[in-house]
Length: 279
Ligand code: MN
Image 1 (cartoon, rainbow, N blue to C red):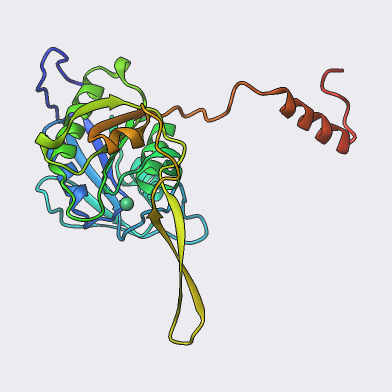
Image 2: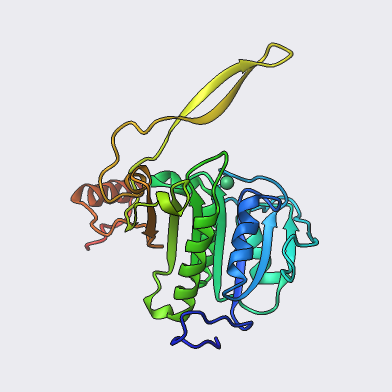
């Protein structure tokens, strides 16, 4: 990695940045991000050919995947459209489309916040999660609105974080989830390092009837959080017009295994007729 850590404005063609998203290759936020990160390094875009929001960590295993290089809306950015999920995009980018490894992955800028434990159904975050699992410092960036999204501050924040992560990898939390309030710079009240809120949204189901009078169901995120979010969480930060930076640990296992779980293991051991692990 050729860069000068002393310079706050370094840029190097040797720094390779992979940009992806789940809103699809035509999403405004993707190109706001790609354009912004051109100031930091050599940007490559690999994105789904359509909106894949809510697809989570899904990868395509049972059908073939097609990909084609497409003319980029931003000059000088190699761009591939993929008939697949965000995770498919990262796998193809890392394994096949490009021969050199990436120094950083940035996913977004998503229209709609990705917060709380709902994070794990986000395709935006899933791309960053997969990047991190391949030892690439990764972050997901989202703005808290589905309409009239203001991408400027998010693009600026992504550029600053990308530069810092690349300048000093030792300081880098390896996987960041970043959310911004949907506001101009003057509306931002602060920047907060946060924890994941328990649950950001309550899913609702809308019931309707098609032209054959068959019932259909449509899942919507249209209910407010059931409780006020705890202070210091990502949902709290967004509700208070702050930029939220949440470091995510790849090891999701709860290390403090309570006695009750040992009892479960003992029950399973007995069911299988296996010798007690302690013997
Ligand atoms: Mn999305």
